[in-house]
Length: 148
Length: 219
Image (cartoon, rainbow over all chains, first blue to last red; front, side):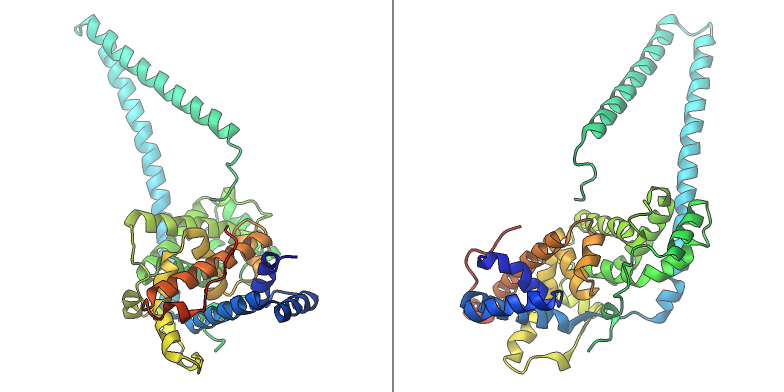
């Protein structure tokens, strides 16, 4: 085993995560290796520093109000979702009605009607195309479950 | 001193007790009341982790509450074999890191801000008798140094030192294995040492932790 292999044991030793056998193995190595001994001392010093700094506890009042804050948030979250979904549905419906009215209106010129229908057709094709591309890549993304 | 918020939560990531599974099931069926005990169980962990990651009390409260709200809304995507906390932690960390990226809070961990804010407490009785001035300086610089670590190294330091999580608990929360946790910790501590050394006066910095070891592994 090289010193590099002892690095995991060194962290485990510092954090008290080793079995007694692993501890003994590491201690034996420390006795014979000056490099690891000095590195271990440096890590011990760092640990002493980090251990002596703590996050201060806030007032109890904050914990008492905590759930209320979360509750308000998800109520608002659900509100936003409902409003957005309903807004989009209403927009689509209104748009559809408006286009229908224009298409059926005999006073509107043919070119304008064709223009509007072509525009809607173009938007629909773009939407389907982007959606298909997203789905295609998502299915083939080997790293989609990897935590970044 | 073994008191304090970070030292009492050994059981925090116990992945899946029966009671919790039942509560989550009820949440899935739309019960908001069932989410309250889950929030109460994990709120302190969530707050302190967020505080460690973003370094500001108001943002930590805001982001941790936001994470719970997001978790409730997306509770149907929680796989029961993961347990609540590791899944929730992913939501929380993503919120915290994207908050830091968005705001470009370069000095989120500046000690002036944190001590004024009252978010960090120093234990004066824990100082080493040898070279106390040097270590005191390093404690002052610690938050700034942690703030300079990259995301994956910052989180292992926060989870280990300020939430006192075991390697197994960290591996679960990070969706990785113990070996990766250990090597990230090694590299994070190496970096922390280097940054603290750099913060010190150039003439004395070499003696801060002794000469750096050659050929340390990279992760």
